[in-house]
Length: 379
Image (cartoon, rainbow, N blue to C red):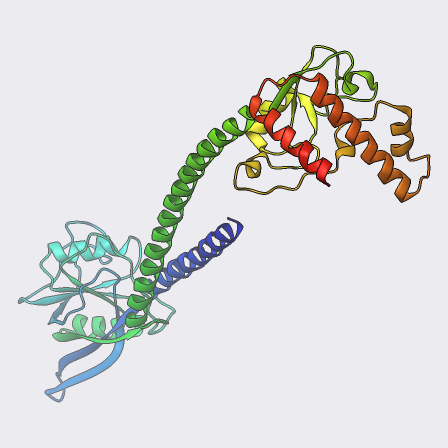
Protein backbone atom coordinates (compact mmCIF):
# COMPACT_ATOMS: atom_id res chain seq x y z
CA UNK A 1 0.00 0.00 0.00
CA UNK A 2 2.83 2.39 0.85
CA UNK A 3 4.49 1.65 -2.48
CA UNK A 4 1.21 2.47 -4.28
CA UNK A 5 0.93 5.78 -2.45
CA UNK A 6 4.57 6.55 -3.24
CA UNK A 7 4.00 5.76 -6.90
CA UNK A 8 0.84 7.89 -7.03
CA UNK A 9 2.68 10.72 -5.31
CA UNK A 10 5.46 10.55 -7.91
CA UNK A 11 3.01 10.49 -10.81
CA UNK A 12 1.14 13.45 -9.35
CA UNK A 13 4.31 15.53 -9.19
CA UNK A 14 5.18 14.44 -12.74
CA UNK A 15 1.76 15.56 -13.96
CA UNK A 16 2.09 18.90 -12.16
CA UNK A 17 5.52 19.46 -13.70
CA UNK A 18 4.14 18.70 -17.16
CA UNK A 19 1.18 21.00 -16.52
CA UNK A 20 3.49 23.86 -15.54
CA UNK A 21 5.64 23.19 -18.59
CA UNK A 22 2.57 23.07 -20.82
CA UNK A 23 1.30 26.37 -19.40
CA UNK A 24 4.71 27.85 -19.98
CA UNK A 25 4.66 26.52 -23.53
CA UNK A 26 1.33 28.18 -24.25
CA UNK A 27 2.51 31.47 -22.75
CA UNK A 28 5.64 31.29 -24.89
CA UNK A 29 3.54 30.45 -27.94
CA UNK A 30 1.78 33.79 -27.49
CA UNK A 31 5.18 35.46 -28.09
CA UNK A 32 5.37 34.04 -31.61
CA UNK A 33 4.81 36.63 -34.36
CA UNK A 34 5.02 36.83 -38.15
CA UNK A 35 6.80 39.54 -40.08
CA UNK A 36 5.67 41.01 -43.38
CA UNK A 37 7.45 42.12 -46.50
CA UNK A 38 6.37 45.70 -47.26
CA UNK A 39 6.99 46.86 -50.84
CA UNK A 40 6.25 50.47 -51.80
CA UNK A 41 5.87 51.75 -55.40
CA UNK A 42 5.48 55.36 -56.51
CA UNK A 43 6.20 57.52 -59.57
CA UNK A 44 8.97 60.08 -59.24
CA UNK A 45 7.44 63.21 -60.71
CA UNK A 46 10.81 64.75 -61.55
CA UNK A 47 12.31 61.79 -63.42
CA UNK A 48 9.07 59.99 -64.36
CA UNK A 49 10.60 56.78 -63.09
CA UNK A 50 8.90 54.19 -60.95
CA UNK A 51 10.60 54.01 -57.60
CA UNK A 52 10.26 50.99 -55.34
CA UNK A 53 11.58 49.82 -52.01
CA UNK A 54 11.02 46.62 -50.11
CA UNK A 55 11.90 45.60 -46.57
CA UNK A 56 10.94 43.03 -43.99
CA UNK A 57 9.76 45.79 -41.72
CA UNK A 58 6.13 44.96 -40.99
CA UNK A 59 4.65 42.83 -38.20
CA UNK A 60 1.28 41.09 -38.50
CA UNK A 61 -1.21 41.71 -35.72
CA UNK A 62 -2.16 38.87 -33.38
CA UNK A 63 -5.64 38.47 -34.95
CA UNK A 64 -4.70 39.33 -38.51
CA UNK A 65 -5.04 36.69 -41.23
CA UNK A 66 -1.65 35.72 -42.63
CA UNK A 67 -2.21 36.57 -46.26
CA UNK A 68 -1.13 38.96 -48.99
CA UNK A 69 -2.74 42.38 -49.56
CA UNK A 70 -2.05 45.13 -52.09
CA UNK A 71 -3.48 48.50 -53.23
CA UNK A 72 -3.15 52.27 -53.19
CA UNK A 73 -2.48 53.84 -49.82
CA UNK A 74 -5.25 56.03 -48.37
CA UNK A 75 -5.09 58.39 -45.37
CA UNK A 76 -7.87 59.29 -42.89
CA UNK A 77 -9.43 62.71 -43.51
CA UNK A 78 -12.06 63.47 -40.89
CA UNK A 79 -10.03 61.97 -38.04
CA UNK A 80 -6.27 61.73 -38.56
CA UNK A 81 -6.00 58.94 -35.95
CA UNK A 82 -9.13 57.07 -37.18
CA UNK A 83 -10.59 56.65 -33.72
CA UNK A 84 -14.14 57.54 -34.80
CA UNK A 85 -16.36 54.81 -36.30
CA UNK A 86 -17.39 57.05 -39.25
CA UNK A 87 -13.85 58.07 -40.23
CA UNK A 88 -13.47 58.82 -43.94
CA UNK A 89 -10.38 58.19 -46.07
CA UNK A 90 -9.03 59.79 -49.27
CA UNK A 91 -9.34 56.52 -51.13
CA UNK A 92 -9.53 56.46 -54.90
CA UNK A 93 -9.83 53.02 -56.46
CA UNK A 94 -10.27 49.64 -54.85
CA UNK A 95 -8.46 47.75 -53.53
CA UNK A 96 -6.78 50.22 -51.22
CA UNK A 97 -4.84 50.13 -47.95
CA UNK A 98 -5.44 52.46 -45.00
CA UNK A 99 -2.38 54.03 -43.36
CA UNK A 100 -3.13 55.18 -39.80
CA UNK A 101 -0.96 56.62 -37.04
CA UNK A 102 -0.85 54.86 -33.68
CA UNK A 103 -2.34 56.59 -30.64
CA UNK A 104 -5.44 57.96 -28.80
CA UNK A 105 -7.45 54.70 -29.09
CA UNK A 106 -7.06 50.97 -29.41
CA UNK A 107 -5.80 49.14 -32.46
CA UNK A 108 -9.20 47.49 -32.80
CA UNK A 109 -11.03 50.81 -33.28
CA UNK A 110 -8.58 51.96 -35.96
CA UNK A 111 -8.74 48.65 -37.85
CA UNK A 112 -12.55 48.51 -37.58
CA UNK A 113 -12.81 52.05 -38.99
CA UNK A 114 -10.65 51.03 -41.96
CA UNK A 115 -12.72 47.91 -42.53
CA UNK A 116 -15.97 49.91 -42.51
CA UNK A 117 -14.50 52.23 -45.11
CA UNK A 118 -13.74 49.25 -47.37
CA UNK A 119 -9.97 48.93 -46.97
CA UNK A 120 -8.38 45.60 -47.81
CA UNK A 121 -5.69 46.12 -45.18
CA UNK A 122 -4.90 48.45 -42.30
CA UNK A 123 -1.32 49.59 -41.75
CA UNK A 124 -0.58 51.21 -38.39
CA UNK A 125 2.68 53.14 -38.20
CA UNK A 126 4.36 53.69 -34.87
CA UNK A 127 4.50 56.92 -32.88
CA UNK A 128 7.39 59.35 -32.91
CA UNK A 129 10.59 58.18 -31.26
CA UNK A 130 11.04 54.43 -31.91
CA UNK A 131 12.30 55.04 -35.45
CA UNK A 132 11.39 51.95 -37.44
CA UNK A 133 10.65 49.90 -34.32
CA UNK A 134 7.48 47.84 -34.23
CA UNK A 135 5.61 45.58 -31.84
CA UNK A 136 2.86 42.98 -32.09
CA UNK A 137 -0.63 44.45 -32.05
CA UNK A 138 -3.45 42.91 -30.04
CA UNK A 139 -6.79 43.63 -31.69
CA UNK A 140 -10.00 41.73 -31.01
CA UNK A 141 -13.07 41.61 -33.26
CA UNK A 142 -11.19 42.58 -36.40
CA UNK A 143 -11.49 39.39 -38.42
CA UNK A 144 -11.31 39.42 -42.19
CA UNK A 145 -8.87 42.29 -42.68
CA UNK A 146 -5.08 42.22 -42.87
CA UNK A 147 -3.49 44.35 -40.16
CA UNK A 148 0.22 45.08 -39.80
CA UNK A 149 2.42 47.60 -38.01
CA UNK A 150 5.34 49.45 -39.56
CA UNK A 151 7.90 51.84 -38.12
CA UNK A 152 7.42 55.58 -37.69
CA UNK A 153 10.04 56.61 -40.26
CA UNK A 154 8.59 54.49 -43.07
CA UNK A 155 5.09 55.68 -42.26
CA UNK A 156 6.10 59.34 -42.35
CA UNK A 157 7.91 58.87 -45.67
CA UNK A 158 4.75 57.42 -47.25
CA UNK A 159 2.57 60.21 -45.83
CA UNK A 160 4.94 62.87 -47.15
CA UNK A 161 4.70 61.37 -50.64
CA UNK A 162 0.89 61.24 -50.51
CA UNK A 163 0.61 64.80 -49.18
CA UNK A 164 2.84 65.96 -52.06
CA UNK A 165 0.31 64.53 -54.53
CA UNK A 166 2.09 61.27 -55.34
CA UNK A 167 0.13 58.06 -55.51
CA UNK A 168 1.74 55.32 -53.43
CA UNK A 169 1.09 51.66 -54.10
CA UNK A 170 1.82 49.14 -51.31
CA UNK A 171 2.17 45.37 -51.48
CA UNK A 172 2.14 43.27 -48.29
CA UNK A 173 3.31 39.66 -48.24
CA UNK A 174 3.88 37.11 -45.48
CA UNK A 175 7.55 36.90 -44.47
CA UNK A 176 8.92 34.75 -41.65
CA UNK A 177 7.88 33.38 -38.33
CA UNK A 178 9.72 34.62 -35.27
CA UNK A 179 9.65 33.34 -31.69
CA UNK A 180 11.43 31.04 -29.20
CA UNK A 181 9.54 27.87 -30.15
CA UNK A 182 9.00 25.95 -33.33
CA UNK A 183 5.29 25.06 -33.84
CA UNK A 184 6.28 21.45 -34.41
CA UNK A 185 7.66 21.19 -30.88
CA UNK A 186 4.61 22.91 -29.45
CA UNK A 187 2.40 20.25 -31.03
CA UNK A 188 4.71 17.49 -29.80
CA UNK A 189 4.71 18.81 -26.22
CA UNK A 190 0.93 19.23 -26.29
CA UNK A 191 0.53 15.63 -27.44
CA UNK A 192 2.92 14.38 -24.73
CA UNK A 193 1.13 16.41 -22.05
CA UNK A 194 -2.32 15.10 -22.90
CA UNK A 195 -0.94 11.58 -23.34
CA UNK A 196 0.69 11.61 -19.89
CA UNK A 197 -2.50 13.08 -18.42
CA UNK A 198 -4.55 10.24 -19.90
CA UNK A 199 -2.09 7.63 -18.58
CA UNK A 200 -2.10 9.10 -15.05
CA UNK A 201 -5.90 9.33 -15.06
CA UNK A 202 -6.14 5.71 -16.19
CA UNK A 203 -3.69 4.64 -13.49
CA UNK A 204 -5.71 6.46 -10.81
CA UNK A 205 -8.86 4.68 -11.98
CA UNK A 206 -7.01 1.34 -11.93
CA UNK A 207 -5.74 1.96 -8.38
CA UNK A 208 -9.20 2.94 -7.12
CA UNK A 209 -10.82 -0.14 -8.67
CA UNK A 210 -8.03 -2.36 -7.30
CA UNK A 211 -8.48 -0.94 -3.81
CA UNK A 212 -12.24 -1.48 -4.06
CA UNK A 213 -11.75 -5.09 -5.13
CA UNK A 214 -9.14 -5.79 -2.43
CA UNK A 215 -11.34 -4.30 0.30
CA UNK A 216 -14.27 -6.37 -0.89
CA UNK A 217 -12.18 -9.54 -0.87
CA UNK A 218 -10.86 -8.64 2.59
CA UNK A 219 -14.39 -8.23 3.96
CA UNK A 220 -15.40 -11.60 2.50
CA UNK A 221 -12.29 -13.21 4.01
CA UNK A 222 -12.98 -11.64 7.40
CA UNK A 223 -16.54 -12.95 7.38
CA UNK A 224 -15.33 -16.45 6.59
CA UNK A 225 -12.63 -16.17 9.23
CA UNK A 226 -15.18 -15.05 11.80
CA UNK A 227 -17.35 -18.09 11.10
CA UNK A 228 -14.34 -20.37 11.53
CA UNK A 229 -13.49 -18.55 14.76
CA UNK A 230 -17.04 -19.03 16.05
CA UNK A 231 -16.76 -22.77 15.42
CA UNK A 232 -13.39 -22.88 17.16
CA UNK A 233 -14.71 -20.92 20.15
CA UNK A 234 -17.68 -23.29 20.42
CA UNK A 235 -15.23 -26.20 20.90
CA UNK A 236 -13.34 -24.56 23.75
CA UNK A 237 -13.52 -25.95 27.27
CA UNK A 238 -16.06 -24.04 29.36
CA UNK A 239 -16.59 -24.78 33.07
CA UNK A 240 -17.88 -23.22 36.25
CA UNK A 241 -15.33 -22.64 39.00
CA UNK A 242 -15.79 -24.31 42.38
CA UNK A 243 -14.58 -23.26 45.77
CA UNK A 244 -11.85 -25.91 45.80
CA UNK A 245 -10.44 -24.97 42.38
CA UNK A 246 -6.85 -23.70 42.48
CA UNK A 247 -7.87 -20.63 40.47
CA UNK A 248 -10.24 -19.61 43.28
CA UNK A 249 -7.88 -20.45 46.13
CA UNK A 250 -4.95 -18.46 44.66
CA UNK A 251 -5.33 -14.80 45.60
CA UNK A 252 -3.06 -13.65 42.77
CA UNK A 253 -4.98 -15.60 40.10
CA UNK A 254 -7.03 -13.27 37.86
CA UNK A 255 -8.37 -12.85 34.35
CA UNK A 256 -5.87 -10.87 32.32
CA UNK A 257 -8.64 -9.35 30.19
CA UNK A 258 -10.75 -7.73 32.90
CA UNK A 259 -8.11 -8.02 35.70
CA UNK A 260 -10.76 -9.35 38.11
CA UNK A 261 -9.86 -12.25 40.41
CA UNK A 262 -11.45 -15.61 39.73
CA UNK A 263 -14.27 -16.36 42.15
CA UNK A 264 -16.54 -19.29 42.87
CA UNK A 265 -19.33 -19.81 40.30
CA UNK A 266 -17.46 -17.82 37.62
CA UNK A 267 -17.89 -19.28 34.15
CA UNK A 268 -14.43 -19.56 32.59
CA UNK A 269 -13.00 -20.71 29.28
CA UNK A 270 -9.79 -22.70 29.07
CA UNK A 271 -7.85 -22.33 25.84
CA UNK A 272 -5.84 -25.19 24.31
CA UNK A 273 -2.73 -23.40 25.57
CA UNK A 274 -4.11 -23.90 29.14
CA UNK A 275 -4.65 -20.18 29.87
CA UNK A 276 -7.92 -19.45 31.66
CA UNK A 277 -10.18 -16.40 31.20
CA UNK A 278 -13.71 -15.36 31.97
CA UNK A 279 -15.99 -16.65 29.24
CA UNK A 280 -17.62 -13.25 28.68
CA UNK A 281 -14.20 -11.62 28.47
CA UNK A 282 -12.32 -13.95 26.17
CA UNK A 283 -14.92 -14.88 23.55
CA UNK A 284 -15.29 -11.38 22.00
CA UNK A 285 -11.50 -11.13 21.94
CA UNK A 286 -11.12 -14.50 20.23
CA UNK A 287 -13.73 -13.67 17.60
CA UNK A 288 -11.76 -10.57 16.71
CA UNK A 289 -8.12 -11.63 17.18
CA UNK A 290 -8.23 -15.47 17.23
CA UNK A 291 -5.22 -15.58 19.58
CA UNK A 292 -4.56 -15.98 23.28
CA UNK A 293 -3.92 -12.55 24.89
CA UNK A 294 -1.02 -13.99 26.90
CA UNK A 295 0.96 -16.30 24.60
CA UNK A 296 -0.53 -15.42 21.18
CA UNK A 297 -1.64 -19.02 20.61
CA UNK A 298 -3.85 -19.11 17.52
CA UNK A 299 -7.03 -21.06 18.17
CA UNK A 300 -7.62 -21.52 14.43
CA UNK A 301 -4.47 -23.58 13.87
CA UNK A 302 -5.61 -25.94 16.59
CA UNK A 303 -8.27 -27.37 14.32
CA UNK A 304 -8.00 -31.06 13.25
CA UNK A 305 -5.11 -31.61 10.88
CA UNK A 306 -3.10 -28.69 12.29
CA UNK A 307 -0.30 -28.77 14.81
CA UNK A 308 0.18 -26.02 17.36
CA UNK A 309 2.74 -25.78 20.13
CA UNK A 310 1.38 -25.95 23.68
CA UNK A 311 3.06 -23.55 26.14
CA UNK A 312 4.43 -24.89 29.43
CA UNK A 313 1.83 -25.68 32.06
CA UNK A 314 3.39 -23.38 34.68
CA UNK A 315 2.15 -20.22 32.91
CA UNK A 316 -1.55 -21.09 32.92
CA UNK A 317 -2.38 -19.12 36.07
CA UNK A 318 -0.79 -17.84 39.21
CA UNK A 319 0.23 -20.52 41.75
CA UNK A 320 -2.05 -21.35 44.66
CA UNK A 321 0.54 -22.76 47.05
CA UNK A 322 3.54 -21.48 48.90
CA UNK A 323 5.87 -23.74 46.95
CA UNK A 324 4.50 -22.35 43.71
CA UNK A 325 5.08 -18.82 44.93
CA UNK A 326 8.66 -19.67 45.79
CA UNK A 327 9.20 -21.17 42.37
CA UNK A 328 7.95 -18.11 40.48
CA UNK A 329 9.14 -15.44 42.90
CA UNK A 330 12.05 -13.37 41.53
CA UNK A 331 13.48 -13.02 45.01
CA UNK A 332 14.10 -16.74 45.52
CA UNK A 333 16.92 -18.40 43.60
CA UNK A 334 16.43 -22.10 42.86
CA UNK A 335 18.27 -24.50 40.68
CA UNK A 336 17.00 -25.36 37.24
CA UNK A 337 16.43 -29.00 38.16
CA UNK A 338 14.46 -28.13 41.32
CA UNK A 339 12.31 -25.62 39.52
CA UNK A 340 11.58 -28.03 36.68
CA UNK A 341 10.72 -30.84 39.12
CA UNK A 342 8.41 -28.64 41.21
CA UNK A 343 6.73 -27.23 38.12
CA UNK A 344 6.11 -30.70 36.68
CA UNK A 345 4.74 -31.94 40.00
CA UNK A 346 2.49 -28.92 40.30
CA UNK A 347 1.17 -29.37 36.74
CA UNK A 348 0.41 -33.06 37.37
CA UNK A 349 -1.59 -32.20 40.51
CA UNK A 350 -3.60 -29.66 38.57
CA UNK A 351 -4.39 -32.12 35.80
CA UNK A 352 -5.50 -34.81 38.29
CA UNK A 353 -7.64 -32.30 40.17
CA UNK A 354 -9.24 -31.07 36.95
CA UNK A 355 -9.99 -34.63 35.82
CA UNK A 356 -11.67 -35.65 39.10
CA UNK A 357 -13.49 -32.49 40.20
CA UNK A 358 -14.35 -30.42 37.13
CA UNK A 359 -17.35 -30.96 34.93
CA UNK A 360 -17.08 -30.01 31.26
CA UNK A 361 -19.86 -28.38 29.34
CA UNK A 362 -18.20 -29.37 26.05
CA UNK A 363 -17.66 -33.20 25.74
CA UNK A 364 -15.19 -32.72 22.91
CA UNK A 365 -12.73 -31.00 25.21
CA UNK A 366 -13.21 -33.68 27.91
CA UNK A 367 -12.19 -36.36 25.41
CA UNK A 368 -9.28 -34.26 24.23
CA UNK A 369 -8.20 -33.70 27.83
CA UNK A 370 -8.23 -37.42 28.53
CA UNK A 371 -6.03 -38.05 25.50
CA UNK A 372 -3.65 -35.37 26.77
CA UNK A 373 -3.52 -37.07 30.21
CA UNK A 374 -2.67 -40.42 28.63
CA UNK A 375 0.06 -38.80 26.60
CA UNK A 376 1.44 -37.09 29.74
CA UNK A 377 1.58 -40.41 31.67
CA UNK A 378 3.39 -42.06 28.80
CA UNK A 379 5.98 -39.34 28.79
